[in-house]
Image (cartoon, rainbow, N blue to C red; front, side, top):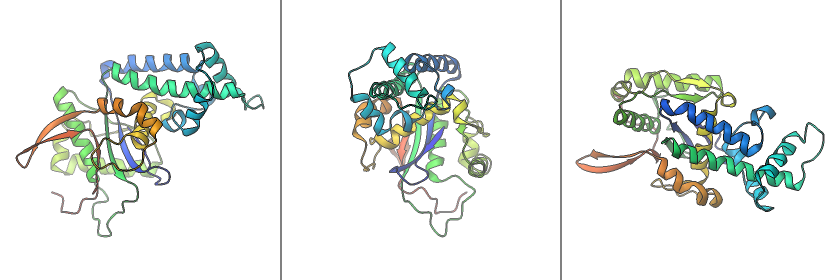
Length: 288
């Protein structure tokens, strides 16, 4: 799991979510991601103290770099990427072809990640709220999950129940106090609310926090959440402008990776989707 837009600066939405991978597929997915990284860039990005991130692979400048020259062969692209990554160490500027190579490699890596998620039957779960939504002055539930986060847990638990498998939450480690607060909210949800106690039968109620630069799965989640924030607009009510280059390239693929099911609410069958915008995330009525 990862998050995007929580600084409320450049993104239109605040997103929390992640990618669900069956444990039987994790090792093969990780091997394929590492192989793709080395084949595409000609090296491991960690060797140059960088990592796979949505904002780095799919930044606006990456699209410009990729389009400024013809498609390079694997060998040309790999050489260009290595020159790009070592330029500052050698006190020189990258060439135009180096920029082209790194831009094409960045997009190619994002494409590979999405393709591998499809290959290994992954599912994407994410809850979104609009930037600028303010907490009510009389809000009384600081130590409990917001409604959008509750919905995220409910949908993930529904998926796990259908699969008849347990789920573990592995989260990107952020600022320690922020992580402690979210862990406290999760603990109270799973131990002190009716729905949380039910969902704890399927979700291990103790999350793990791991730094993204040492974990490929967190990096994969980061790429997916970034795509959702900048280019996915298929959830009901999403009206913010999208980056067209990302939307055209990935929106339909992300939609196919989400989990959907039908739920009866007030006697009506409702289609539930695992990528969902929430207009009113703050609980206003008394919790049971």
